[in-house]
Structures are given as structure tokens and as C-alpha cells.
Amino acid sequence: MTETVRLGRLLGVDVGVNWSVFVIFALISLGLAAGRFPVVYPDHSPGAYLVAGLAAGLVFFFSLLAHELSHAVVARRNGVGCDGITLWLFGGVARLTGEPDSPGADLRIAGVGPLISLVLGGLFAAATGVLVAFDGPELVTAAVGWLALINVVLAVFNLVPAAPLDGGRILRAAVWKFTGDRHRAAVVASRAGRGFGWALIAFGLFIFVAGAGLGGLWLVLIGWFISTSAAAEERHAELTDSLRGVRVSDVMTADPAVVRHDIDVREFLDEHVFTHRHSTFPLVDGNGHPVGLVTLGQVKQVAPEDRATTGLASVACDLDDIAVVSPDEPLADLLPKMSACTEGRALVAENGRLVGIVSPSDIVRQLEISELRNVRGLSRTSA
Image: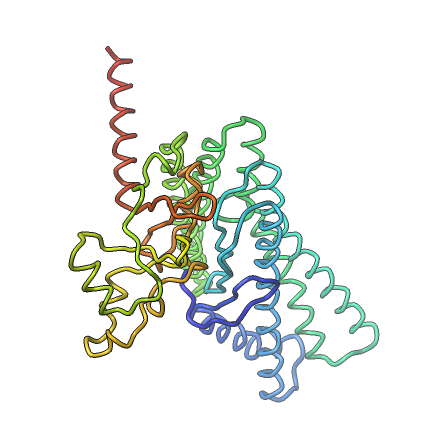
């Protein structure tokens, strides 16, 4: 899920929002202001209802952020990186750049999100009790009470044992622990997610026909998202399994053509692009250490009259935006780290020096080889 607005960094994690957040924020805020709050506490002005609805909607999205941020923090403590967090229509996504190395780590990373939501729900419920006991402002009481309810609902829904929900991750960790087979665990959780998604779609259509209106369509959308995401996770699990045992060094292009990082775009074109067949070039410093990567697509954005005055490094991907791995790293672990900035390329370094590069075509070729080997193995078995 791509972010539309970057909010900044929190606890070392980049945080952004997708445009769809503004849609759902408006729907929640207006729904509370025009529906729930006037029913619970009538006789307030429309402006007061609107302020209470906006405040409750804003705090709810901070609750979502806390949920996703907890995943990111615990993931980093368990050796899994995080590219950032994006809030969007269906909640939030913590973009983890790797996979847990044990069922225990998988369980901790998945379980902390619902735990945080339950804690927040409990805190808001306690605050609601205090406000009621001391006759606090009615709309504040209504907003805090709704926040208690919605956080508990968020936690319970996320605990459903179906990928990509947190409960699906917990199911994956349990099956992984019981069977010792990470691939099988991922497939089980993904198929549970597909089933749950289709069940939500069917239920949503049923209650829509029965007169539930937008509530039914909303369930259909959520079910569609869950089923398609679960199917994508199953494909990823199959992909990862087909690359089992393959190292980065098995597929990388060794000793790639490199470019000094301190030249301009015109010099780069004259000395490298027009004399080589490559479309991607790693940038190195004077000691041969990788400092960036540039693609022809990035260079094409520079106007011809600006090429002599534009430094190559200024249009290239920074090292922070590039997957840099060791030759001995499992190829499957590289896949979640590959960046859009580099068009799916990754650099391979050993002792700080560049030794290779991996492109999507390298991975596709390896997948085709793995498929051919599997077919050959089946043929021999059947013979």
C-alpha cells in the first residue's frame, strides 16, 4: 500500500498515510456526529457533535498507529526490519522487510498488535467509567466510550485465525511450531484467510439483500481484501519454498560494472550507458564501497540541457533505499527487501565491498530452473 502523505518518523519508523485514510476518517467522524452521538446524548448543537466526531476519529487513527507501531518495534527486536507504516482504508500496514526466524518470534510480532489494542480498549473503558462516575461532559464520555469499544472490536477481529490478520500470523506460528514446517504453516494460514474472506463476502451480500445497506457492502469489501491478500500470501509462500536452499551467490551477477558516484549525468551517459548494455549501475566511492544505484529510468528524467550540471548521485537511489545483502544470505530472505526505487535490484556486498548485483530477471531464471528440476524429479518418480 503506497503512502500519499509522509507524516514523519516515530521510534525510528517512517509513518505515512494513504489517501483512502481521509475518506474513512470523514465517514467515521460524520457517522459519529450525525448518528451515534445524537442518539446517545441528544440536545447538543450540530457543531459540538461534529467536533466530538472529529476528535474521536483522530484518536482512533492514533490507536491504529499504536497497533502497527508495536508490530514494527517488536519485529526489529526480533531481527526483522521495517520499511515503514502506512495507514489506509482498512487500517494499517507495517511493511516488514524479512521473515521471523522462529515460531516464537512470529508469535511475538503478530500478537503484540491485538494486545496493544486490548490495552487501549481497557484504558478507554476505565476512562469512560471515571467520566460517568464524576458526571463528565456528555460528548467526551460518548467519544471515549466509543474508542473503548472500537479498540476492543479491532483486537478481536484481528485475532481471527486467518491471514493476513494478526490471528492468521498466530495460527502460522502455532502450525510452524507443531509441524516444524514454515511453508506448510504459511499455506494453512493463507487458506484459512481465503475461506474467511469468502465467508465475509457471502455474509455481507446476504445482509445487504436483507436491508443492511452500506454495512453489508463494507463487509464485502473487507472480505474481498482479506481473500485477495491471503491468496497473495499463499503465492509468496510457494515462491519462497521453491527458492529453499538457494543462496544469493547462486543467482547474482558477479563483479558488475560500477560507476563513480561523483560524476555528472552527461559523463555517465558518454562513458557507461552508451558503451555498455546494462540498464542499472551501482555507484561506488573511491574505496569501492557501494553508496547508491542508478537506473536508466532515473537518468531519463534529467533534461538534456541539465545533464552536465546534474550530479549522478542526486538522481540515484541512496544506500538507505537499496537492499544490500551478503552472498551467503538465503535468496528467499532477499525478496521482501527489494525496493521499488531500484526497480527490484539488490546489491551484494562482502566486507563492505561490492561483489555482485541481483535483478528480478535473475530471480525469475532461478524460479524457472527450480520448476524444471521439480518436473524432472516427478518424471523420475513416476517412471
